[in-house]
Image (cartoon, rainbow, N blue to C red):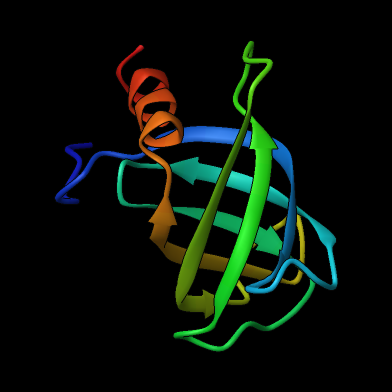
Length: 107
């Protein structure tokens, strides 16, 4: 299957912490894939498009926590891991964190 996205995504099934845009109401989510522009994750909550959330997680074999804020693009009920599968685009990400993500994608 040929990747049709502008930015290729890499499979990634790791635990992460998600909070509202102010860092409150932390809860666990499962990351599903990631690209240089965004990610998909599984959650038990329906999330409204345009809503901002903060994320924190470790890439495989990395000690440094990756942190960023992402905006929800879409949400669907099509996942086996949780009630909803959500796609989000990075809204704010540190250059070092983006470099770690790009390194992971290109491995």
